[in-house]
Each structure stands twice: as C-alpha cells, then as structure tokens.
Image (cartoon, rainbow, N blue to C red; front, side, top):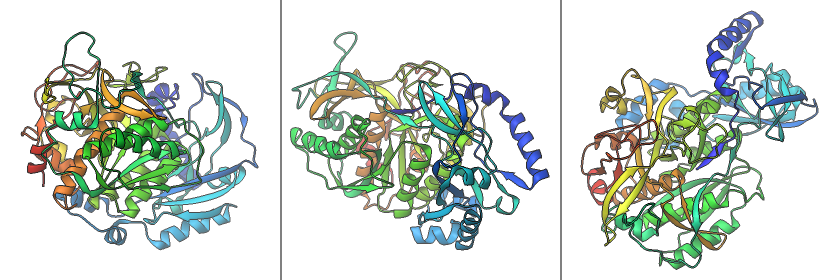
Length: 552
C-alpha cells in the first residue's frame, strides 16, 4: 500500500492532545473564535520550522462543511436503505445558504471562493498565505522534514463563532501529511506472462505468483457471475498513461476482456508517475478478480495530500455512478485526525454508503503499528491503525498468505505477518460491529472501531503477477488485497443488478457462514488469527460463489 509521510512528533502530540485542545477551546471562548477539527502540526523530532511562510505564497484551501441529521443518516445506512444522490443532498447535505455564508466570509478575508463539490461538503478557495492565516486565525510556517521542504500550520485552524455550526475542518494548510509510494515487490518475473496458478508449500520460504485466473480459482469465483454489469472506481494520482497501457498488456496476456476506462481528473493534471506501480496493481487485479467490469473509472488526484484526496472521495460520492471503489493507500490514523481530513472524508464515505456505494481500503502493511522510519512490511512503531481504512463507512481489507492445492483450489490462508489491523483511537464502532458481537471479543475497548473487516491475499511471497511499465513483476501488500475485495464485490453487485446496499452491514451479517474462510493461523505481530473475528484478518476471506449466493 502507500504510506503517508509520518511526522515523528505525532507520538508525543498524542499524549499532550487533551491539554492542547482544552487550552484552545478556552481561548476561543474569550476571543470569539471557535476551534475546527484541524489541529496544529507539532514541530520537533525531525520536523523543523525554517521561518514563517511568505505572506504572498499562493495557496488553495478547502473548507469542509458539516452534514445535517447525522443520527438519521447512520440509521439509514445500518438499515440498508439506499438513497439517490439528489435525495441525500436534500436530506443531509449542507444547505445552499450555509455554502453562501462561507463564500461571503472567504471574500471578506481576501480569499477567492472557487469550486463547490456537488454535495456542498467542500468549498475551495485561493489566495495568499496572509489571507489564509487571517481567515482561520492560524500561523503558517515553512518546514523541513527528511531534507524536503513544505509548509504547515503550527497553530490550529479556527473560524468565527458564527460559523462554528457550519465548518468542521480546513484542509490545505499543510503539505506534511502526504502519501508516498511504498509497494511490496518481491522479484522480477520477466517473461512470466501467465505464471503458475497454484501456490503450495514445497519449501521455505514459499515463493510463487498468482495471475487473475489463479486468484479466481483460489477464491471459488470461476462459477460465480462476473462483474460485467457493474462500474468500479480506483482512487489514484498522477499521469496514468502507462497504467492504462499496462492494464491492456495484462488483459492480453491472460485472455481477459478489455474493460472501458475513464480517467476523472479531480484537479489539475499531474505528470507524476512515481505511484504508477500502485495503480497498475489496483487496476489489473480489481478488474481481473471481477473477470470484467462495465466500466473502470479512475479518480485521478493531482497529489496525494489529504486535501486533494478529499476532493476525489467527494466526487466519487457526488457522482454516484460507481457501485464500489478501492483506495489502496493510507497512513497513520493520527495524522488524518490531526489535520481534520478524517472528518471530511468520513462525510463523503457516509454519503457513498447511504447511496449503496462501497469503498474498500488497504488496512496497512506494518502490522498493528504506525510505522516509524520503516517504509512498510516491517511491523514497527507505535500501535495505530490506518486511515481511510478505519472509517466506519469503509471496508478495511487486511492481508493473508494464500496457499492452494496442486489444482489451484483453495487450501488455507494464514494471517500475513505485516497485515494491518487493530483498534481505532478516534472512530466509533458502527452498529453492525456491535450487534455482531465483534466488540465483545476485544476486552476493554467497547465502542471503538476495529479492523480489518475482511482479508485477502497480500503476502508478496504469494503475490500477484503485475505488469509495471510493460514488465511483469511480483507485487503484494494490502494494496493487493483491497482491489481483490473490490473485484469480488463487483461480482456480487452484478449478480444482483447493482441493487446491493453498502457492504459492511451485510458482511457482518454473514460472519461465521460459508461465505467466508475463517482464518485461524498466523499473526500480524501484535494480533493472532483466532476462530471467529480477530484483529489480524477480521471476518476472514471470501468464498466468492458462496458469498454471491448468501449476500443480497
């Protein structure tokens, strides 16, 4: 998966957070300002200030507005009610008057309002840093981390008390919390256009590759309906020209139908290709697991900053044209909480869920930890989970090591040692976890979101044969398991003519049934795989044919 750049000082900041928030709240009460969910970025432990950000620095900020009637919204999602995008906006979106009040305020502070997302959740604005600091009563510094420079808000973002019931957070105030490529490659498989479709333990370590048909066979998908009636989404970034070429090469090599592809730019087009191998994996193995899809839509952000990704998620929900999507990236949950993007993205994910759309996300590649100084695949750091996987309105997909019989059929799975999972610090458990009894298995943590929800193959040693820049490579990580789960869901949606609601309540309703392989071997460092739900593999992995028959 892709990992966000870690601010090492966030560990210390977590300890001091309660005191800091209390002080900010008291100050806001005396000055007429109200704190938003966008907290100050903490300096120290490698992140240093190199002076105030120049006042004339051009900036783009995104003001996030709050949904209305959120209790009713969660009830609708849990009940499996499916709304149209128009109905959602009428019932739950911020009103036109609220948007207008934000635009008027921005103008009064010297900022120029720009686009407003169709669901009224995000109002973009441009202007100099001086106006941004004035509008949100914050301080912006130029900062350096690991030899790279950027900027960050070293004071929390606040708004006038009159807007406190409308604004939830302000994005675009830092470039610290950004994603960087971190795929788990094993080795080159040059020339292996159609690798072996089984992976048995014949030695240690076991090294093998799965092609799309091999994974279909392993997860009992060959007799199930394909994803031909369903459109899917992939969230990506940068120049995707080669990604589409690689997808065509994978399809040709494996005799798969050529799926229609649309690229939806959610900002200024970028020439960056550093994450192309990630998007290769996503596109080839979501559609490959589905066998085919009606359309593949790639929401293409200009950068992997929280601010730009928020627009991609909002557009996916606002368009309401794809039944499911995969976000094969994430990072330490604390970072998303700190800058306010957690609240912003949760709103978009909630809209999607209410409309019967499902987002799958990688649970992480560092076990139950937030990686400190390690790229991925090495469980090290402090206990934490990955966001957006920890959102209650996202299906978190953990990782396994997948083993098959000589004929390619399913043998067993083990929890992949670096697969992500654990207990959220900030997200409340959704009702479907509580009613399923999941929280009863996590002593002392009642009321908090746990993950993963499900798991699929992720171990690079049992990885996928992916075309990257025209050459086959073996790739793993939960960046593989998330698009695999998306491909399974494409099949289920197609079998039911795209009438299936948000996945999570349905998945937990089938916990313990033949729809899932219960994984009881292996561990992720802190968490062992056990009978039933666990923090290593969640409910387990799909038996696609049986899940397709049971989940309605």
